[in-house]
Image 1: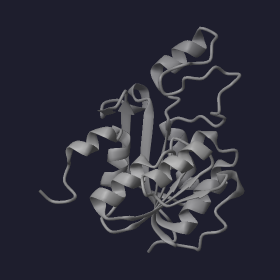
Image 2 (image 1 turned 45 degrees about the vertical axis):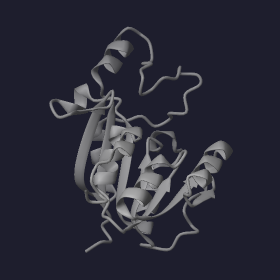
Image 3 (image 1 turned 90 degrees about the vertical axis):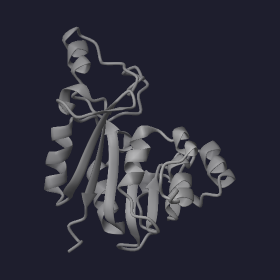
Image 4 (image 1 turned 180 degrees about the vertical axis):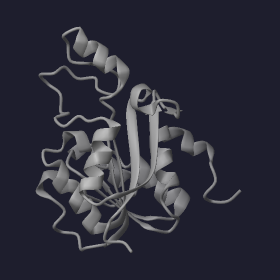
Length: 207
């Protein structure tokens, strides 16, 4: 079996993270912003021979990254990515964090600056039960967005079309899109039926 083929250990990695990993070239350099406990980066190190670096603010997550042998920097993403050089990485990842950023446009521009390719994922506010909940006079609470309106970290929710419009404005060329619902990939009417969207884009700085 090739070292890049699926192994039993991959069952520990969420389907959306496996999709992200499939878009990343073997032996490439990867920066993961808000990397959590380092599951994706550990997978990329072990199965695709990538050189990886994570950025994470939560103490417990930083410790778990270190335990996994994943290089990590403890920093608040709102402070930006000034410590990284232009095009320092092949791919930069922002998984399920975009919706909690105060300055969405800034972090996307910074991603395009520090890497040739970017990957983002976020909850899809266009999921049809969300609209039904709003019609009933309540903010939606779902598995992908499990918070009440008063304690949610999600401050910039969007639909698939919203993100694609912003990407066009920022000069980001979308290379691929995948959508999920409860871990299953959604291909039919994704704007209505998916709870999570994942996008692979290319910086306009890349020829």
